[in-house]
Image (cartoon, rainbow, N blue to C red; front, top):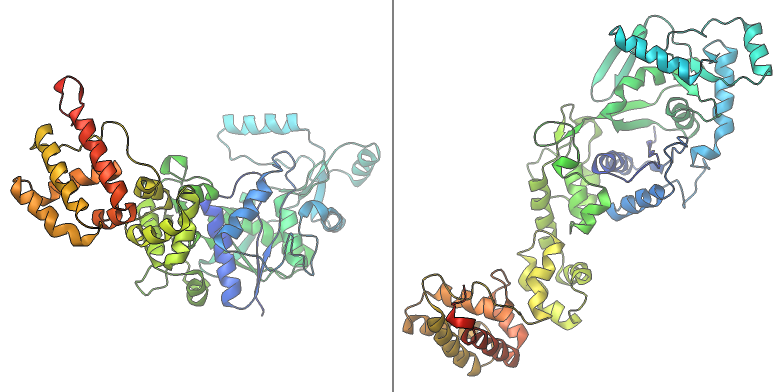
Length: 481
C-alpha cells in the first residue's frame, strides 16, 4: 500500500508548534515510505475564517522545509484542495446518508439548543443533542423543507459500540450511547469537520490519518461514517499531547507562540524540525541531533509514543546551538546577515568563526558583533574592576595602549598584556575585561584579541583613548563603576 497522508489545517489562526508537529510527522512518514504528503485546507468554518492565516501557515511549513507533494500552489490529481471548493461532494454524501436513514434533518433552533445545554448543565448531565428531530414523520420533514425551514443534517448514531483501531494505541472500544448525533451539514450548507474530512480522505485515497490526540474522541464517529458510506477507513495514528514543563496543556504562559515567532526569536528551522520530531518520538539511538534527511531515514510511525510529550524550551535552545555550530561558515554568515545588516560583508565573514561557537540564537548576533559597527558610547559601565580605582584603570589602559601601538592587534600581543597585568599587580583577566569594555562596550564578546584584530590598530587605539578620556572627565571625581 503506497502511503498517502495529509496535513489539513483550518485557516483560523497562525501555525503553532503543536500543529507543526502533526505536519512534520505526516511529512516524515510519507517520505520515509516514499509516499505522498498532501496539504489540504479545511476552510469550512466560515465564522472563524481568517484570510491572513493561510499565508502564514504555508510560510511556516516552507520555513521548516516541509514542502507538500499535492495541495495549494502545486496542484495534483485530487484538486481542488480547499474544502470550500468541494461542497457538492459533501452534500452528495449527506443526501446519501439521509436516504439510507443514517442521517436526518434537524430543525431545532440555536435558541432551543442553547436552552437544552443549560438545562443539562443544571441537571449535571453530559451535554448532547436529545434527539427531538430524530424520528420526525417523513411527510412533516418534507413539508418543512419545502417551506424553506432551516435545518442541519445530523448523523443517526446507532446502538452498540464502535471500535477504533490505532496503529500505536491499539484498539479502543467506545459505547455509542456516549456519542452525540453529530451535525454533519450546518444550516448554511457547509459541512462540519467530521463529514468533510471523511469524504475528502476517501476521495483523496488517504491511507493514514496522523493527527493530534485531541481528535481521538471523534474517531468513533468517523469510523461510523465510513461504515455508513460503505468505505474502508484509513489507518489511524493519534499523536500524544504536547504539555508544558508543569505537565499542563501547552499555552502561551509556557512560552508557546506562533511558529514563525520562533524564527523571529533567532531559531533555525533545522533546530525546530529536530526539536518537534522528538516530541512524542525517538530514534532510539541516544543521539538527539538530527537533520531533516536523517529524520526521514530514521522515522518509524509505530514508535510514536502514547504518553504526552513535554515542550522543553531549554532543549530547544540546546539543539539550536548545535545546529548553529553545524552550519558551514559561509552559511552561518548568511544566516546572521539579517541581524547585523550594517556590517560589511568581508568583516562579517571574518568575524563569523569567532561567534559561531558562542551563539545559542541568531538574535545574539547584534550583541556579539555590534562593536564592529559602532564604537561604544556612554560611561562604559564596568570598565573599572571592583578591586581597583579609576586612576589605576587609566594607567593600565595607557600601558595597554602602548602594547597595541607597537604591533598589529592579534593573539600575539598576549605576552605584552600579561606583562602589563604583572607590573600593575592586576589579574590578567581584569586587564582583559577592562580592555573588552573599552573596545566593545560589553563584557560578553568574541575572543578579545581576535576581535581587536578585526577592528584594526587605528580603531583600537582610538577606542582606548576615548575610554581614558571618559575616565579622566568623570564629573566631580566620581569613579566610574
